[in-house]
Image (cartoon, rainbow, N blue to C red):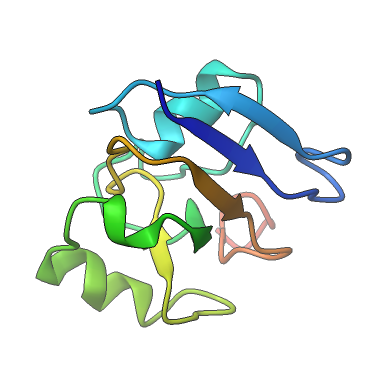
Length: 113
């Protein structure tokens, strides 16, 4: 069973975490099931960038991103070459090291409705 190592995030996971993941589940679902409350404003339908993560290790073991995800990622804060939307990134058989960026673009959460 693969493991997701979540690097420390000041609000969501101050001490970091090491969690077991099921192959075939999304990174977002796995984080949420383990009480890491990553933003997911569009309810995981690939319509926003609030669940953006940077996969520091294990990136190549994930499913390939689709054009819709790639287009959205262009709008994500702190975009890096190994960025993914966690709702679209499906865990493979390798361990992952994931960083949740400090900021996300979540207009509803920030009161910009």
